[in-house]
Image 1 (tube, rainbow, N blue to C red):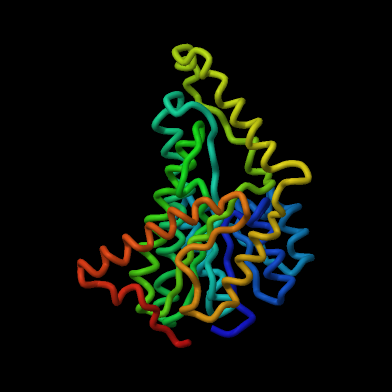
Image 2: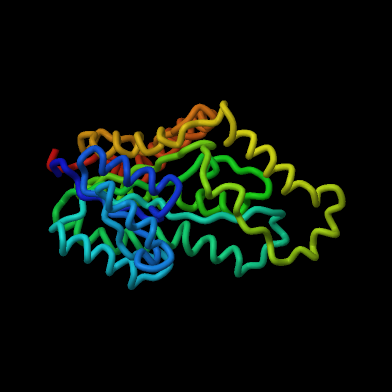
Length: 292
């Protein structure tokens, strides 16, 4: 791959996704911003992004046909996709028992299976070119969890496994995969997560029924005010990863001071992973083989 890179970012109508595509465009890369309804409810956002060198594109990660169409449209226009950034995500907040199975399935449909759909859409193209980069936007909550965030954290725990599996299954084909693990940053995502549908179960929790609001307040204190992190750090990290030489990128990359405790988990897991692969005789899968 040679710069400028052709990039496609999911969930790019707001928050980190929008910040990422604007950052990439400023640096001269071809940035496609996946979003739902760019000619309708997101028309204003789409129009503003175009003035900043970003190309909006219709994309709903919960629909396979939409994922395939978006990837196909970018390839038809550019001739290639160099980078896929799986950023789209949703969350819910509340006591876990109060969420119905259907609510949990909706979170997984976006945060986990949305990634599955996008990777399946783009990988035949990347494999045919023997090159590519997939960034999986995970979270510190994908390694350590907090109460009242069980379904969100569960999807990110699952994404950690999925992303690392892709890493080793694709490295010998010249395709890089990296798990990006941001900490707490200001975002329109937080504070607006829907609560559970089955609130009747709260009655059995006594004083703990107030735990969700306590956790919201604590999290707000970490993401607002002068001590909050700058989300531009996350966008700059994605840019740096994209511009790194293929084969030199890490499996995981923590972003932000408030998630560095996770480094202990990552280091221990890396040791275990190497031992597992050696035991099964597949340690060669951990070596990148690309065009350089």
